[in-house]
Image (tube, rainbow, N blue to C red; front, side):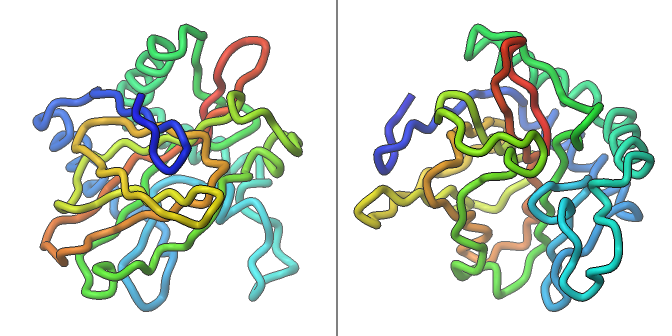
Length: 225
């Protein structure tokens, strides 16, 4: 496990190029279910993401956030399980083998891991993604300050332009880039500031990443988004 910016980043090879192409094609085939996340650029998700969907939107403060609507979350999870159940099972098996802990997707009280989709656009060549830490566990599980060994964030590219990477900052504000690899799951604790490097060479390749988080309980890892 290489150390990047003082943070441990793990890379697990999971999918072959052919398997990546299969799953990327399945995401594209479900385009009618994508949610547009930015008005000006082609940024989408397939699935519910706690950091986007667990709180009311500023322009619609009276509405109940979709993550909190049980029926909608169940529908979302059913869609993902139907089309990507095999892939989600592979992810659980990989994390279980890596951590020596039982691992399952949490689909009763949380949303299943889903996909970030960035179609080619000139703006994605710049550092336009947010610099952030992952604290979704507070809103989904009510955990305030977990031990870093008890949370994780993972990204699994099934389609990616060359140069896509994870940038992580250490405590003296020095950043290091960790290159993504097609079909390889990148895992870190998510508690240091980090940023997605989307498409730095502006290549005509969609960036499609299975994205999720994990929280460690007495029963092992529970994966969600």
